[in-house]
Image: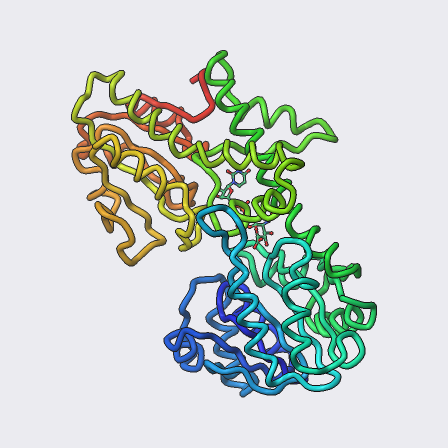
Length: 422
Ligand code: SAJ
């Protein structure tokens, strides 16, 4: 089949590559000229484990070609961003524009699939009206479905294959056509439903995680008041066969979990109270973290304290700093005029002020080391290595990433988010 994938980002590119190495002819489309050029030159414009070799294979076998313009195809897959606006409502302009861009190219018998996460009813209310402009009969001559991506950055290629997939068509034929297409590489079960249910499923998966993390963050804050280590308490509670509490941290980042719950809040603001409260709790964690840092410096009698922040990406072992809680922590420190350096071994380009490109530089003269992202590279830091570099030996671990007992033995004042037992 010929497939036209609109959007060559974190989802569109790996998906294009997978179809191309599994025998389909793929045209990858992106408005970003540089991304298009890089893909055609087998170069990565984003980091993902296993992408480099697969991209090479897909381009070299002649099945993947990128362009800035769509063209005729049997299948169109839309994988463009669906962010929120400042007022926390969905910005569906990318989805609408991408849909409009394929209208001149769709022909009888074609299938259009939306992979982007969207508020329930977007396929029916935004995409269908656009696609009707093709003059094809929707559901009889042109087939449409939602097949939301569910992969986690860092493990995209494993999860594309092994995860179950939800496919929701505007009618049964659309669902079946979509299932047949993805079966070429998906080993998990493909579950069929209608388009609006599929949209709901995707959004509630991420909302479930957000609410659960907010709960964990609340437990962390309570634990700090009552002589409990929340990490230990959560671990023990999770031995119960019906309990699965997530972990606390300095906030929730990324462009999915911190965004998707708003899609439900937008539709039914009065009926989504827990969802909105959780979102706001998680959004308040960077401020809480910055306040803690401030208090720890004060405790040591330091008015001109200097902070070494470790971690800019929104989670472990990836290079993606979009919506990262670290950026919000930095803003709060700046508001308080607290001196800081920040270092992330996964982020090569300079994205914030006071960013250093080595650990040594970041901790030089610092009074507190703060772990904001649980990169493996941070877990392996030997506290003895920092001995002569830091002015005050204090460490604050917001992710329960470090063996703090060893750090205490090395003479550090140790602090952990959610732990007043330490
Ligand atoms: N986080 C916590 N505590 C936890 C888990 C995560 O504070 O217990 C934080 C992380 O540090 C990070 C943020 O939440 O800042 C989000 O990270 P994540 O690993 O939970 O999720 P994402 O955004 O990388 O990917 C999620 C996944 N959704 C689910 O697991 C339900 C993924 O499967 C989706 O495909 C993806 O969203 C998406 O694109 O929607």
